[in-house]
Length: 293
Length: 189
Image (cartoon, rainbow over all chains, first blue to last red; front, side):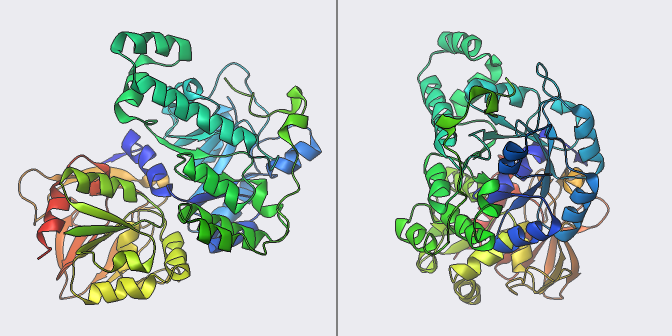
């Protein structure tokens, strides 16, 4: 019997596919998410839009909050650590979280190194803006990828950009010969064996969700059409006027994304989505997606 | 012959991929009409609480029960096995009450306790099956009319069969071994 194998780590992400992972800050919110049909929750101290508004250093949640959330729900509980902060990751592993998100939403602890995730028994999910970044994280041990988008904005444009970038780069690789792949690996800054496996599979070798800016059922369905395996929704739910209704509607839209009549139906009468910020109006130093390499 | 895979959430595409390598016609089941003419049905791995909510929202619960009552084969893997149960040790979600079994969710613990093991399966010839258990459920009661077809080394039952119904705590769809899917197809008349 073998635990913490690559298959077991990537396998949990496979079970989450077609689902919605919701950011929650309290046990009460976690229950609302579970009742709405979330396939997992992400425990964090503040939702990204509050992190933006409050400024300061954003860190891992208080373990007490994480334990309360673990006790409140039976779905998997994920939690965020800062980029490169392997001690926060060790704490989250000791708490028995089901997945760790080494996340650009928190203030990075290390601007040069990400956590060496192979050292851990708990699986990791990491963000990416393009294929090279995704494959670098996988080579460090990430068992699941999410495109970064721009968290806490409610503006889906960066999520779309990052997702289309990854997909476009995968399509390009599929037409390359072996010698071209070696050059492409160099250009992407990614290990050749992973680039070869992307060509063979026609997709990333791990599950890939979308994140960062999804605020409505239509946004979620859009990301599914663009080839995402599922979506993370952060501020979009608990900053909406009616979080429970918004959460349920996004879950339904992810399932029935191919059926516009159903997506239309679930979009009715939800009240205002989060107000949001246009990503174009953000100064460079307020962009979260550029954290990490 | 058409095999349907419940496609509300979870690893349905892994099941579909294996069925395609066996040259079987497949269908993603998201709405009740998708169930009408299927000859076999798989409930995949995923989140059982999510499954049950979406089954209710899209009015799939009764059609799945009617499908099972028709005697056509049905197989649940992991979260699917939870759905197959008569009762759970948890107060949620409400299972579909298809097989005479009681199931405990997350029986081995959290993700850190997920594991892989090689286990012999009585209905499958040849080498043991490589079984992957992810936040897996276990049986706390197995009725007299239910046959145990696989156990861990310590004797814990991990797969059962009752007439044309199968429940496995592990995920044959996460491996390249097609024998379990072949066995399921062999149940279809």
